[in-house]
Image 1 (tube, one colour):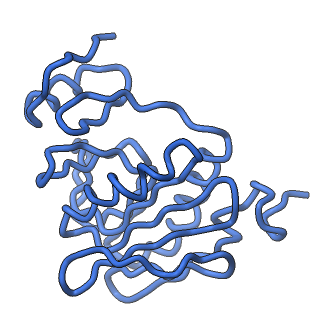
Image 2 (cartoon, rainbow, N blue to C red; image 1 turned 45 degrees about the vertical axis):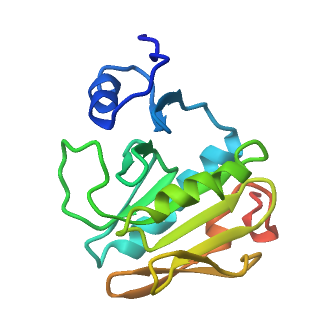
Length: 194
């Protein structure tokens, strides 16, 4: 595998280099940063999101996608790979970027929670098509949500500890049950497996 260069990358140079790498890298403030693996809880929550979202989005032009699609951030020059994205743009089978990311989900850990809720929040706020940013804890049943306000900024909502998460997509809001998000994690009583 090629090693990342120490100097600052431009977005086009990074994208050309990254296309030949075996592993995924993000571009953060001009530096290539290898993405680390996650825990079983992280992987299960991300998989649960995609499974739960797919039937809810069937009647729309939107689709849930995993962490294989990147989101370039024009304002900062960064490149992010969210855990789950609801993409509502044209489907291009050969594209590596989300075509029109509408809602972005990050599964938090103790080591990344602060970063996801500050620096990644700032980056995602710089993509006008993203209307909602959702951070999901993997250590407790807690979902933090930011909605894009009329001034174009993300406004944090009250954390969701139980019940349902309301998602704003084309055609109106849909509801995602937290029991579906946390299924199999033992964090919610109804999510415990038999």
